[in-house]
Length: 243
Image (cartoon, rainbow, N blue to C red; front, side):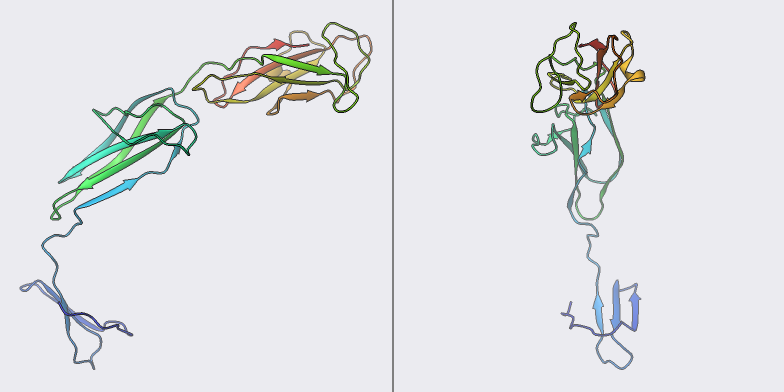
């Protein structure tokens, strides 16, 4: 096949010779140049790889399997890898019997390698996988600090004692969703006079682990601080009265 010069105009004339299996074309009707191209015996590249996006599953406790549809001619290799944070990844592991061999983690990625002899190509479609997420509720905080106000000049206050501070400040730590949980997302917080109030319905939701009383309190009334913890899958702990 000749080397084509750089053409500065659209190809104006072409025809395909079915007997010789050649495509002929000329740059213009005024040109005395005629070029041809003959298709090779192999119509496909012999191998190719596709890598999926990193799927953020929020949390995965176990894999239930991976499914796909195969077609064409050749070999198809399907692999997966997982990561707890989308940055540090495990090694690629081959799928075996429809089972994902990678450890359950928040992030999953799929790699497909197709290989053929060039005359035909394998095909893969309808890739889908299934997994189970945890249903365990997160734990309550392990400790709480109560102050007369937020900022400089505050003093410690204690549950069961009468105070006249109008804007006490509470902070807590230690809430957990376990090693392979989805993680603590936030807190339902209730501060009021109802001792058995449900923070999820009577309180407010927040993602920070502290709370300052902003509404005026009534003299001679008993107030309660009640907290529920919610993880990123929506699992919610029982209510706990902290003050």
